[in-house]
Image (cartoon, rainbow, N blue to C red):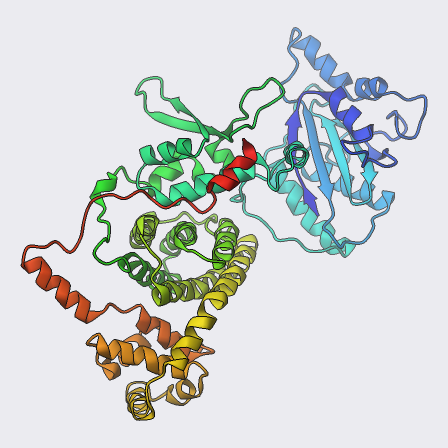
Length: 565
């Protein structure tokens, strides 16, 4: 059961909508199921003699009194509105049940505490099977305003209890860190325009993807504007520094033809200017080396940082773990933007899903996750996707997403745990798409039997407790090919197996040979490293600091931006 509290100032306009036909004639049999006074509330839905004006006047009596007392100044935002909707698949609720829901919510939110004769006037209107609208005028009979602090959170808590008592689907409890959901008007507008998502949702994805890829605040605004998004900054009166900003999607205007602006914090809590500055240090792009000599380096460094993030989740430092989850959210956007092929859609979906899992009530230590954030930013400048190494990174993200879900679950973060699980499913699907043909090809190119037997001896010597499971794994043949490649790159197979086997325990791995295969794939090529060092000594730099244009962020490709033009 989902309540959605909002406020406004047009009593008559809201009543007209509630009892009207709806935007698509979807309102059937609109009528009042509960009210502050069922006998004294005119019902335009049931009484032909009742009018919208009569009902508005009865609701607004105390507002009008208060207006006269304030010399004609009507209290701002005095109309309180709370649609309450059951979840898909829930049973049908009768009018009497909906009436009880409404009374419990106005009591919980402070609109009309039970037994308070001077409480606000309110009505609950039903015009569909699965929801009601609760409307109130927020001036009490004694002229005071009701105590509605945290009314949305209190309505949510009341709904959780109602779900349990009414046998309805139990929804996840929140912690006030979720981004704002689009309003009904925003959804209706997107539907009229044939858009799959609202302007608010579209802007949120653009801003998150850009924030993940850029290195500083100035680049953040510059890239957003290059994508056709309008940017309006708010400057401090004394310092002239940016203290806030708003964004508007291309072509998204109101009835007057003006851009519809959304403040950064209204898109998502971590898109406020202060939160952005916590993980966007004021650094020049040229300060960050671009791995031109070794295109695989950004992928390898990100894989290493993802493994480190997994270790952080196992620590007792919740602030550091939360910082790594926030950085992992950025990394998923950058991995998706640097990925090609059909699996890119799954990675995009994973990044969008994990957006909810990246924040909680625990304050993040962003400095602890600098390595992961900076390593993944380099993927925005990567010039290619290095085959097996890209899959090794994807494999690491699958396990980190699952660990993130477990971490949130252990701390009671229900919405975040569910979001991390959803991201895990998308990442797993993307990994399977990418890995299956590569593993099959590695198995097809397995070395001859004598070499495989030698590697078997190395496994038994390096990892005796796991050897039988590794050798029985269907990915064993692929692992022998990877070991042969590593040996060619100047690695000692036995020592390498011991090193990668110690990175994390293998007891819980369903396919230990597959795990070892991707861990070894992520190891640097020692022969190439040695050649690069010799080249550096002879005067040829192994890196170039020349900046390259970043890859298009995951949600900002031109064909998608055109939806709002």
